[in-house]
Length: 130
Image (tube, rainbow, N blue to C red; front, side, top):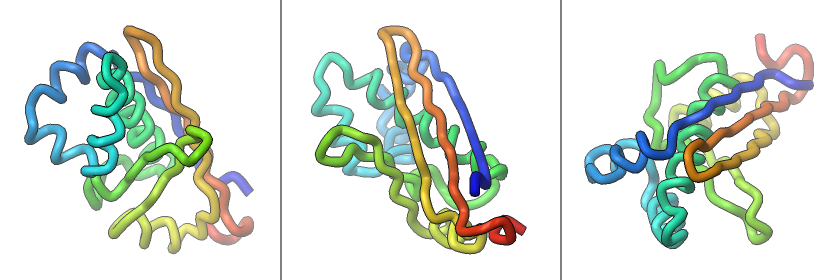
């Protein structure tokens, strides 16, 4: 059963300016996300922006915003085929367990100017999100 949906869009140039400041990068992205995004060369800013939008979409799907935990407890990395996979840690892993979340589906996209993400959360059963 779908227990949450979220969507977000980000201006790439805004994130490009933000990632020039290392404290922002450390507050928002995990070391593995940083490595992946920086490996993208000219598309690094788009990759950072897509992951930022992804984290916002996940928070919206949870229905909480960033009321607890930190953005680094939401990690978005590609699988072997390039499909974005969400890895939850700490606060968000616990919160997902309490909500009965069994799958988090995430789609990321970007152009030169914008990055967007859509998240769908699937719960164990109808009673899981109470």
